[in-house]
Length: 262
Length: 223
Image (tube, each protein chain N blue to C red):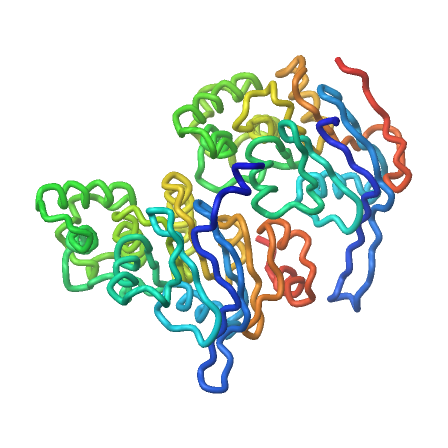
């Protein structure tokens, strides 16, 4: 157990709150996320889960509380006390963000290879041949035929766009990835394939991930831990299978019992 | 200490959707399991046998008492452990075999077993998984196929192979909680003459009745 207790969290949130004027986004959220851990945030629309994801990925500034992140050199930094360029560097290189709508996460007018290569150039890659080789490698890993490398994502299906978005995010070997309803809006069979792929990549690369979803089956498949949100507050946390199989709070019991059996 | 020691364990479910109905399932449960020992939990359905296994695996939350699982020179109390500690134990020390195989669709049998070995390099994990499948007499031609179309017995052998796969060598005595049914017992009996280094708790239905709330659990001597 000593190895566990000595290890420091990758991301730590303390009393994180967000108010939009007088309307509550989320309140007093706190947790530690360690390297390689996948945490799901579940709850119905309007429960504050997307607000929380935007807060954690430093896209919006919290009204209260703080977020600490352990940098690659082992030092710990307060996200909102670091410089803006530093925050942007984290977002470009050390983190990934998978949007529900692939159009928000991709450049629709440039080629698939360009979409993947752009993230590499942002972290200093300059050799065209190396970038292209790496892009081909990543397209293969997300099961996109390399003959489609010069096509724009406009010509891609929904499932392919989502896989391209994942390749674009993972190419810089991020340590933390945020996912907002990654399988929302896809056909069931396409969803299953994408979930397989995500599960495998996250495990192989030992990436920490925070997945926002309203789909408890997605949470069960992808995550080790779960946070249940309601009206802006976290009402229950624990191991994913524990919370889903032995839910304690009335609202969690309602969520779990609302699933239609397959 | 023993690999597994339970004392004073109590569990009650509160069903908020049924007007806060309280279902007491277990109280005052205590027993321990020695290395290599195989303990059968028996009783009528609804007596709480599976709940005991789920509590040990950390799948159900424990209301009272302690569930100590030995880990090296120390021990972890599952009843109070953090999610991280439980996950770490599950990777290294605890296996769980369900009554039916519940596998991710489209994933081959070999990968299903190898996935239980998340801490070791993929190639090593696949090699260990192959050895385990061979030990359970799963024909090699099935290894790369998803088990959805396999027979019940074949599925259960994959289930067992996964449950017995942890990232430490067998000598470190992981506790295996499993739900046992008649045909899986016979299937694994053929495949594995002995598991001297595992501590197993098969949850048997077809054996004599003992209530889980007053646990006089029958114990089998070491094979």
